[in-house]
Length: 100
Image (cartoon, rainbow, N blue to C red; front, side, top):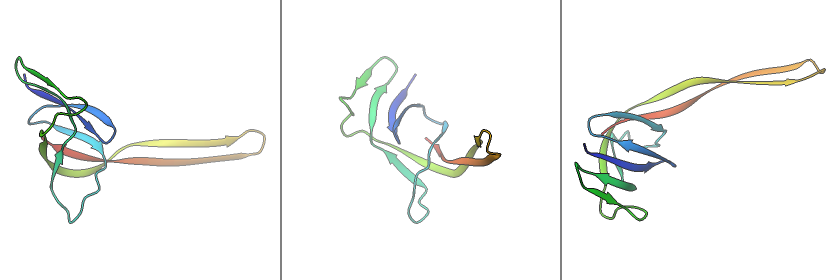
């Protein structure tokens, strides 16, 4: 089984081929559809493991950006007791869906 552990926007994710992942929003220029991940921490082939310190040199992954999507809505409630004050706000985080 082949997989890679990469550092993407402050988090570490396990990446396998032919899967899609939701990561934090990537700002892109000119509607580009491809990206590269250069911070590879670990590379595992069937029985061989290559570990980077901290990253593996001359190793990168290319992938396809599928779309920008919204996550679940988070509701924020502020109240002040005995002052008759309540405020309800909502927030949706933007993710980028990528395909490796």
